[in-house]
Image (cartoon, rainbow, N blue to C red; front, side):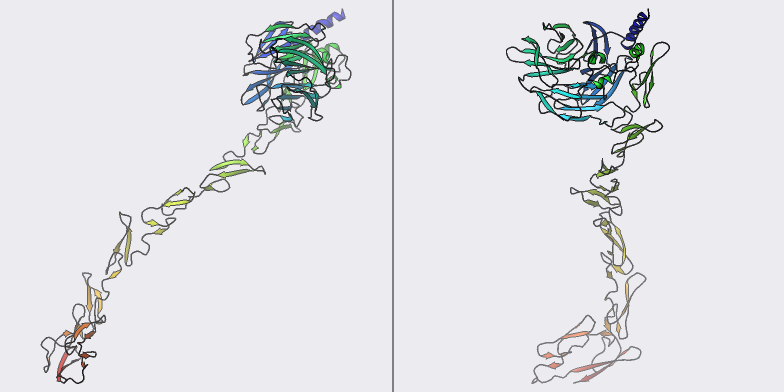
Amino acid sequence: MHSTRVVAVLTLVVGLAHCFPWDIVVGGDKQLYFYYNGTLTHTEEIPLATQITSLTYDPVHYRVLFTDVNYPSMTISSFDLSTAKIQVLLTTKTQSYFVRVVYDPVTQLLVWKTWHKIYTFSLNPASSDKAVDGNLLVTIDNDCRDIAVDICGRYIYWITDDEIERARLDGSDREVIVDSTVHFRISLAIDQQTQRLYWIDYITANGGRLSIESANLNGKNRTTLYIVRNASRASSLAVSKDFIYWQNSNEVGTWQLPKNSSEHDARKLYSISSLRDWSYQLVATNYTIQEQIQGIQSCEALQGLMPNNSNPVTVSICQNYCLEGNCSVNAGGQPTCSCKAGHSGERCEVNACHDYCLHNGFCSLNEENKRVCQCTAGYDGERCDISICNEYCVQGNCSVGADGLPKCSCRAGHSGERCEVNACHDYCLHGGVCSLNEENKRVCQCTAGYDGERCDISICNEYCVQGNCSVGADGLPKCSCTTGYSGERCEENACHKHCLNGGVCSLNEEDEPACQCTAGYDGGRCEVSAYKDSSCDAGNSGQGSISACHQFCLNNGVCSLNEASEPVCQCTADYEGERCEVSVNKDLCCPKVTTVTVTLSQGGQSTCASTVV
């Protein structure tokens, strides 16, 4: 009676943990198709998916992991079979349509491959392995077709057209384990229970031949399990407790082969019309931890994932139910979780740090179990959500220097730490307009009235000698002369050399020059000598005013006034001397010369006296 009750409870538990029975899951486009004994039991729509390209099953946490490629990024997500929740685990740019993801539940390590590289990413919140695009594990020369993880042995395996290799999960101890009879190898799987490696080999010659092959995990004891002649290509190899599964990529069908069958009896289970003929890596099996390590005592890694509670009901209900916490069964017989710090959710599946720190920031919990971000260079803020370059460079491009500080590369015409200084600022004076020429040098277009490299020179500067300067409509300087000056630049003084014979010049009421003559001179410019008037002649005396040249030059000499208004004689050929009074030919008879002597009285009047010589 007691055992009957236990079985009933176990049946209830299966219903709680798996809302539907299934032994394989097939992915295609945006759906997950769950089958049990060849019958479709559940279809799960993934609304946000673009194209599901890879599947694997995590038996520890009861979740299907899948990849979704949406160029230029790839997303690895999980579908929880207990809660039916979809959670994004990682978004990375290390993507490819031929991606393949596997999972190591011991270290919570995601491992995926592209054509030539294998990457890892830890889902363990305590791990420092948080590179946003994953950490590069190995680089492969040839096209990588598939990968598989040996959980017990702690190896990662990969297959190419040429060979099968393996390395430790840290990338060390890399070695080739299968390199003979190389064909077109496609997919790879590891069975912990049999400690065997399985792969698909395809030969294109003679219509095509497909074979399912196996070897020990070290590559020894290679055997062929199944051969199909005139076959199309196949992919997505997976193993369960009893069977080997693969998907035919051309006929779009899933095939099943008994793992221990001596008859090599393979059969086609079903096909899904909605799948595309180029779908790859789309089959995963419900292979429990108990089934994988049953009877194997050496696999300590998986043994450690088994619950220690000896109560069969509690073990069945709580087994791997709480992802990050302790499980107990409540009064209603249902599992409940007590989550570790930094985790929440019905099964402690929500990591408080997940996607909290942005831009590759590292999240951790402080002593008060609050999230704290350690930001990468170039970012700041509580969640590393603020770029230190944000609005830092006023006129230029910002980058983060080796010291973690923002650096500006300024645009042409700007300078300063933040490119805040405009090269033209305050460069052109007096309203001049500044611009940069083809050589990025400053050039000024000056306003009317200014000139010079910086428009710093007034065209009126010292232009007008005696007057005020202004700029005309033609942009040229114009002078308004002060009284007594004239000329284009007011450089001509009206009195300059106007009064002769020492006369003093001044401007009259009409601003015209007028002369105040010295004693003995008269006339408008003091050009008339006050010697004798026109009635004054030899032998007579009288009063009057005559020119300074009057009777000055003798013997027909020609008189003129020099710059000092003094009389100067140009003599004939026969005479010389200041007044042409000396005969050049001394033999000539000297003619009689009448000399007029002019004297001035105190009143400035002239008196004439004549003498015959």
